[in-house]
Every structure is written in structure tokens, then in C-alpha cells.
Amino acid sequence: MKDLRGKNALLTGASRGLGPYIARALANRGANLVLTARTADALEATAREVSAEGVRAVSIPADVTDQTDRERMLEDAAAATGPIDILINNAGIEWVCEYTKLSPELIEQMIQTNLVAPLILSRLVLPDMIARGSGHIVMMSSLGGKKGSPYSATYAATKAGLIEWTSGVREELRGTGVSASVICPGFVSDAGMFAEYGKRAPRLAGESRPDEVAGAVVHAIEHDVAEITVNPGPKRLLSIANAISPGTVTWLLRRFGVYEFYRQQAEDNQA
Ligand SMILES: NC(=O)c1ccc[n+]([C@@H]2O[C@H](COP(=O)([O-])OP(=O)(O)OC[C@H]3O[C@@H](n4cnc5c(N)ncnc54)[C@H](OP(=O)(O)O)[C@@H]3O)[C@@H](O)[C@H]2O)c1
Image 1 (tube, protein in one colour):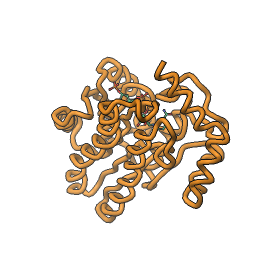
Image 2 (cartoon, helix red, strand yellow):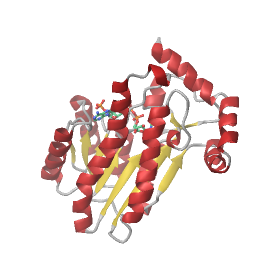
Image 3 (cartoon, helix red, strand yellow):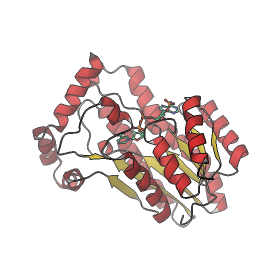
Image 4 (cartoon, helix red, strand yellow):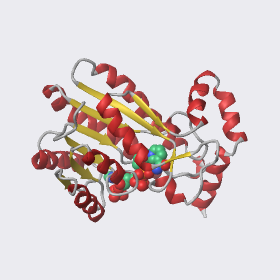
């Protein structure tokens, strides 16, 4: 989708973290925005801020794990802006914890929020996009979806699911005018779930800025890119190496403190 001016983009997870950065980047390209998350006042603040770019921005609070909410939110979105041209499935949660101490409810909640909700929302908007011969879905995955980390295995499972969903559906959509992309950020500084830990990422992993993630979302839509990794330095190369020798990469990540980082975070979360 070369020109985002006047297109209607629905962004989940727009209340805080990376969401407002993605909203700003889309508004900067002239896209109208439907912003959703559960926290109404934070959504309103994002909507007010991006409206200053001269685009239409509406906030529609909803819980993406609730089917009634999902359907109502999409109806309200269509009523407010017209058909959805772009869906960015950005809402996500991670709980870093020893797997056997993770409650079944939290496992279920992570899968519902990170995997089921994006797949269902995409299922709900795709028929109309295909009928109109234009549209784009963006899935916010993670480098964690390319290499599962200890203490964050459920999160990794959901994010791996998004990568493979995109690979499959993107091909299925070929020739329809509709497409799908997946974004895989590593650790992101300044805003979002990792920044909230208040720690620096292990050097081997590196950190990216939230505006770089937002830029990747816009780039993926404008240039129809299948997958974008947002991460400085060698972890990108490690993804390639992992396809060739996963055991070696596991050893490297263990040796250079990445897995120790997760172990410490799991300990902090338990305290
Ligand atoms: N930050 C990073 O380092 C990083 C790295 C790789 C990938 N990612 C991915 O990037 C995405 C955004 O992460 P973030 O760092 O911005 O996280 P965040 O700061 O924790 O924000 C998460 C967003 O998701 C929304 N959300 C969570 N559960 C929801 C639900 N049930 N219904 C509706 N909205 C819900 C939250 O809004 P409410 O609480 O208001 O509902 C919030 O807007 C996630 O998919 C994450 O996995 C982040």
C-alpha cells in the first residue's frame, strides 16, 4: 500500500508502550486512526495527540480477548471511519516466570491476547479487505518468537505462532490486493514492556528505540515487506545462525548472559 493518506488504520495496544509511537508514525503518513486498548483515558490522550497531525483519530476501548468486545469494536470502528484498510495487531502481554510457577490462567491469557485475538481480528476484517481488493495486516511478533527464551516460553510460543500465521496467510492472499507482514523487535528501550523492567539488555542482544519499531510498521505496509526484524547488532545474525545450528545459538545466548537476564527477571517477578 504505497500511499497511507486517508487510509483507515486500526491499531490495538494503542494506550501505552509502543502503541502511541506506531500511532504517531501512521498519522505522520496521513492515515486516519482507530485506537483501541482497555484503558480509555490513555487511548483518548493518544487520539488527541495524533489528531494534531491533521488526521482523524478515534478511540474505542475494548478487551481484545473478548469476542463480544471485538465485534462491537469493529462495528464502532466502521461506523466512525468507514472500512478498515490496515489492521495492526500490536496488543500483547508477557509474564516472565518459571514455567511450572505460571498459573494456567496466565498461560491462557497470554495465548488469548497475543495469538487468538490477532488471528480472530484478522479473520473478521479480511473478507471486507479482499472484497475491496486492498488491505494490510501487521502482526507484532518478537525476536522471542524466533528463539524461545527460558522463563518466557509461552510468550515465545505465541509470537512464533504469529510469524508462521503471517507466512501462510500472506501467500494465501497473493493476488488479492491484500497482504500481511510481521514485525520482530528485540528488546526496545524507552517505552513498552521491556523498558518497564528498568534494566539494560544484555550486550549480545542490544536495544532498539520505539520509533524504530514504529518506522518498521510503516515501512512494512508501504513496501509490502513479509517480515522485519528490528534489532541492532549480532542478534539478527543469530537468527540466521539459529536456523542452521540451534544448539550453538542456545549455547551462545546462555554463555553471553541473555538467559541469565530472563532468570533474574523471573526472580524479580516472583518477589
Ligand atoms: N517492548 C518490547 O521490548 C517489545 C519487544 C518485542 C515485541 N514487543 C511486542 O510489541 C507489542 C507492544 O508491546 P509494548 O512493549 O508496547 O507493551 P505494553 O507497554 O505492555 O503495552 C501493551 C498494550 O497492549 C494492550 N493490551 C494488553 N492486553 C490487552 C487486552 N486484553 N485487550 C486490549 N488491549 C490489551 C495494553 O493496553 P491496556 O492495558 O490499556 O488494555 C497496551 O496498550 C506487544 O505485542 C509485544 O509483545 C515488545
